[in-house]
Image (cartoon, rainbow, N blue to C red; front, side, top):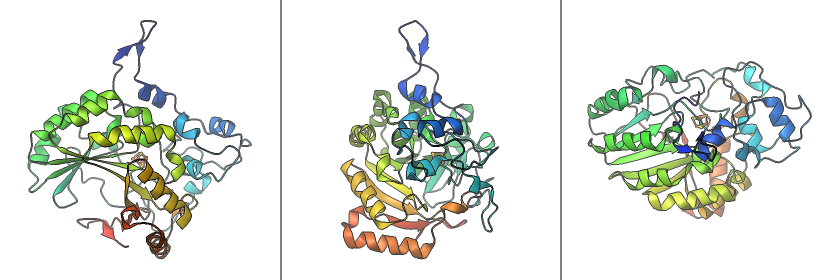
Length: 340
Ligand code: SF4
């Protein structure tokens, strides 16, 4: 992944040089050096064990680092982004393409769910999540952004019954507001009625929720659903909460999906705190995914029986609208499989 889809500078700084929008500056300044991350967190050098030479390098914005606990090698936010030595251990049943979607994208469009079509809108991300099922996705070959989206839109028009376009990636909010606006205008000129945006940007870099984005979202005729991705309540600090409450009125729905991750959120207390914090930010919990078995992520796996136990525990203590659906993605199925 890269930031090659991010917007060009659009404003001038005081010294006459081109200045980046603050979210892009934050992305440029993200921590990429594991030794620097250890220093920032006041951890002894080499304390964490590193997957040296991994092709999926460390990338974490400084604002996200600021939410980690200093001196804690087991911090749940750190664990999500640290390239741990355990990633290099081969594990049976874990592969580069766990949901078997590589090669499915024609012109950046994947049609695996009934009534919906998924666009690979960008290969860039605001943070590299170690458990990401697309960590080895060949973005260069399968992006929808080519030729001003025209081939992808033509492919979408050919999908019978496609009512919803799902923008995914990478992260679609790594597109500039201008490019995102252009894409939404083109989608609005098809038969789809809803656009869904899967994004971790408002969590990783809340500055992404800027006036230009709000204008783009308010300006489309399409029903607009944003599904953010949060795994732990501490990801939702006051800056993120502000971004969420700014974003929410511009949308039809604001939902969250999480991945159930060992050592991050695999206890009822943590998951309940996440649901409650999401609600306080105006976001409803939607899905809790069992891990997709991508190579390098075996140390995050929580089994299905434990997942069901945890959702039952949530149901016993929270109102139904705060209990996410436990789901698993099974390659070839026309929708996610709901387990609890
Ligand atoms: S989970 Fe989302 S933000 Fe994280 S690396 Fe994967 S696509 Fe990027």
